[in-house]
Structures are given as structure tokens and as C-alpha cells.
Image (cartoon, rainbow, N blue to C red):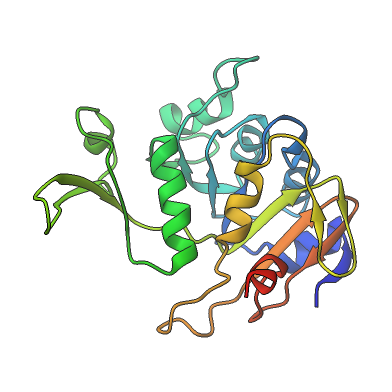
Length: 228
């Protein structure tokens, strides 16, 4: 069963140095409060995943929390470039940042492959772009049935996903209102179905809404339980 924790305790219990963390959500669903708590607790060497790294990721990078950024567009339509992201990439400040850049479609496919426990995601994409030149994880394979050339990328399976929601209850049900696909997608794909070779990989899914339903290590998320 999920546990109800304060935001401070949820981050302390869920986010560890070196973790791979997804904080998705658009506009009012961006988990700023959780990101600020990660900063306050001085987490380090995080791999941050987000389809559109926004100001909260810029702040996390500027405060030295991030080692790697997995993303598909970096910036904000309202404020433009992310200056701390540029500092890290161009000047190594506060320290160098590894970039793994994808398309939006690639990120969505990679999340889906992670949810299914697959070793890779396959899609029609990346051909004719410069992304394979800057991202060595993008490979091309031939469809064994048609011979079509397809892109292949690694799955995304975050150690922990943080979701900002309007409401949550003690049964683990979460209410999201607004533009929700980017919020629930990584939550579903957070190591909730460890493949057989990784039976002990922990599952940690938190939400931030003043309280935090939390999936204990080694159990499925509420979403996966309802689909069973």
C-alpha cells in the first residue's frame, strides 16, 4: 500500500544520489516544489529525464544536482534558453553535464519500451536528422520482415518518477487535471515491471501534492495493480 509522507520525507526516502529521476508534466503539473526539495537536500549525480527540460531542471543543474540530462527539447517558450544548462554544457559550470538528446517521439517510445521490459525501442524516426551524430545511443536496424530501416534506442526506466497532482488519496489513487500524458507516462514506466534478470530492482513512485503516495520498494505501482 502507498504511504502518506510529507514532501520532505518523500524526497528523502525516494531520491538518492546517483538515481535516474523523471519529473514530467506541463504548465501547472510541473513538480517545482519537489524539485526545490531535491535541491534543498543536496542530491548529487542525478540523471534527469524530461521531454522538455524547463526552469526546474535549469535550477537543478545550476545547483549541481545533475550529472546527465536525457531530454528532447531544452528551453522554455516564455523565457527562452536555459542559462544554467548552457553554463554546464559550454563552460562545465558548476560541473560538466552529459547530454542525451532525443526527439519527443523517441522519448515516448523509450518510456513505452521501459514499461514493457523490452531491451530497446524501435520507431520510424531520426533518419535525416543530426541527432544520431550527437547521440551515440541512436542506432539503425533492418526490419527482418520488410527490410525497412528503423531507429533503435535504449528504453527509459527511471528509478523514481515525481508527479505533481491536484489530489491523491490513501489508496494510491491520483487525480490529474490538465495536460496529463507527459505526467502519467513516466509514472507508469518507472521500474514497475522489473524484467526477470532484475528481480530486486526497487520501484519508487512518488507524487507531490502536499502529501505523497509512495510505492514501497519491490511492489507494483497503484496504476499497474489496477491494470492487472
